[in-house]
Image (cartoon, rainbow, N blue to C red; front, top):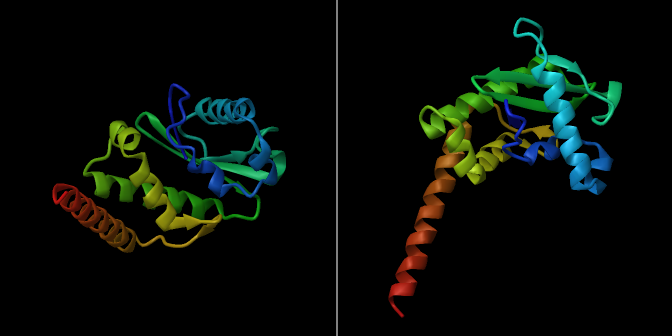
Length: 165
């Protein structure tokens, strides 16, 4: 759900938020068109206007909204149906960014690029199947830390068994 100012999509997990059935059958060209249109709609807006707008034609038109926050050189963009609360999604984006900042200790773009699996894990702790599961940052961080510990122990066990051979 975030896009750099130069129109490069940094994570593709945005599709998990969309309940648009046509996303499952689109090709990469259409996906890139959607990304360009989203970037065009969001980036041309003035900084002092609201952070939600109606989706473009490729995104689903009036039935969908783009809700975004702009942090430094990144745009965090969520596409939701018209029944979602704009302020609730803005809060979700804020919690997501603050959680990233805590997990990566002053998150930067490179953290997001080189640790995209961790970013997806954080996102999965917050949202699954289009439903918001958790917005308590401390709970999210606890679960992410538990996952990291488990991965480290698995790596240690794997390395130990390879050395025994």
